[in-house]
Length: 520
Image 1 (cartoon, rainbow, N blue to C red):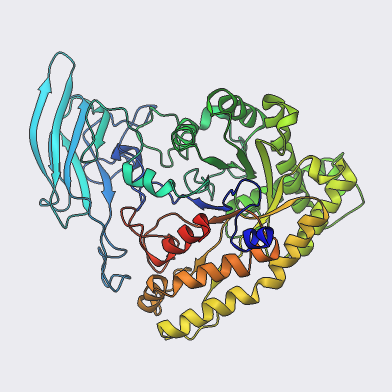
Image 2 (cartoon, one colour):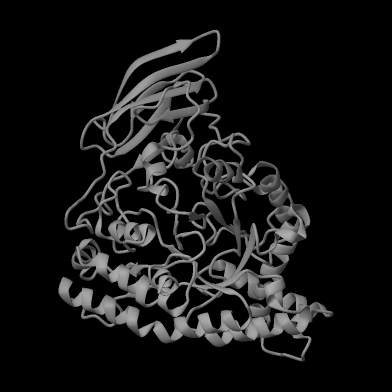
């Protein structure tokens, strides 16, 4: 009875390890992840809105401005807002600003969005310090830097309550929210979707030199750079003592992967596990990485001597699936060459993720891996899917009650696909994971968005999530479930977060997660 109860609750019978993790939303959102706001600021612009001239690290070489943050409700800038409650998180307070150089500071767009106090310039260090005070109710901060001497560098804007001389990277509310979970997925932090080079480009690989480093001005897309520096991901894992689920760029060269493995072998706490996924949703034609993978597979077969068609297969759709499976295996092998081959399926956990409604694809890929390389369990730790429950088919003017009913119906109707994938995993001695999951009201359609958001906040959402996880995942034999996401704004593009305010962890969704994690 104990083992059965543990499976139903999503708890491992070995050591009571919870099986629920969380994906982190893209940086600069409701997660308020970094103490230094500038790490998630937008790229620098000239004062009239053109891209500013910047140095190799992204600091402006001329008078410039940046959007430090914009935490207004979606479409507050172009009403009507999506959120019927107009909910806006509180980001008021006294921020510590510092930078190398001199400048006249002012607010862009809204002159009342903040005020500058105690500005001082140290001629010896060529550094300016000031306090930027954001009043209650304000959530957009655009800072103008005028009358500089060829720009400014090393701009830091620390959130209220953090010492200017402190070394904290991550905010206390963010760490408190993460504390609940045993594992974090970094897909959005790594900007895995659509940031890869086009396969037909002269340089069609992502190299180690292309990555962001901690000294960069910001961690958004900047030329070939994208994603939070790996050093920050290692630091977060070490500080929180949580396992990390990382997404390797679709165009990453073998050397990129090897250098990443070396960094993690050297710096990541040896007690932490690493889940290795090849990009994100390589099956999904909505993302450019699917096109990259297909073109790479076709080019390889055309060049000859490829094992993607070692059985005479002529269908490019099969080739691209096989390439995805092989690349997942190769990533694990490269990491194992640094960590030790005995670490595969221990610390190193390669996960082959694909489309939940296509269980036959999983079967084909695993059968090909077995025929070509031997038992997949020697190379892979798990297969994974994204079994969201949604409101597809609900009337455009559906009430909250109707939407809640559609959610439950959607979860229940997905059971055959979920079970088929889980059974295939078992056949090959692999675990079955959910790389993303939860409620889905996204898509961008503004129709009935107010009720969609109300449904996501409804108290009944707690029981919906418990039902989805306990009855329609863990009871089927599913293992680690990575909820998407820890936090997010709520809008027509989705209400993905367990909370839409990282300082509030009492939402119905978070209550459900906590109940799963504690085993109550």
